[in-house]
Image (cartoon, rainbow, N blue to C red; front, side):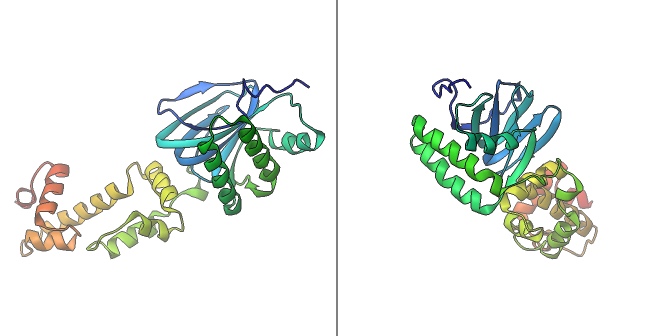
Amino acid sequence: MKVFDSGCLPPAQVISLPHEIENHDHEHHQLVIALKGYSEFCIEGTPNFIVPGQGCIVTTSSEHAFNGVGESEILTLNLPYELSVDTQIVKRIEPLFSSNQYFRLDRQFQSILQLLVQEMKESPDDILLAEACKNTVIAMLHRHMHLDFPNKLSLKNRINMTLIDNYILQHIAAKITVAQLAGCVYLGESQFHLLFKLQVGMTPHQYILQTRLNLAKKLLADHSLTLSAIASACGFANQSSFTHSFTKTQGTSPSKYRQ
């Protein structure tokens, strides 16, 4: 086995992904875990996205494309194809890198990972620390990773929009937060926001505004209702806010639309 020169290939590193799509392959295995934001990957033609608590395994020489959306951060573990490690570690590594795959991590592992990443961020040039972090992750990974990772926007991970629409309509006159919508479908706020945008094509806030404006259009047909009353019924802070949002999105004021 070749000796692993850690100076040439960092054992582990925390990096920010570029917004532009990059495509390459490398002569070593790589394990990627999302730490922040939303990242898109396509490994040998198999696309997916990963958010914190999820990751992917890229085997040696596998062509893969990737990019980050917004502020995204990942942890990468680099493992040379030929390893100068003892037999026990090889037994742990070989099953993990038998094929390219996406995975998710349980909450216990995520808590431990946060501590390791924090240490790495505080000492980014400490190769011994990076090596120790990599070995810790590899040693524990097989007990805490789950491979039942759905394909991008499969039926299994689509947001139930009926539940979302019902909640918005029931609370349309009040302030609605992303956290409240995420709770309707039992998702974390960050993951919900990313899944929602990917599925619907707009952010939750934009969708809520669109729903408010659609209701406003219907109410404008009732000439007995004042603009102030419509603004209140649709959840706008005041008539001025309603008029500004309506005019900006519809290209005409509420009063002209009513005519």
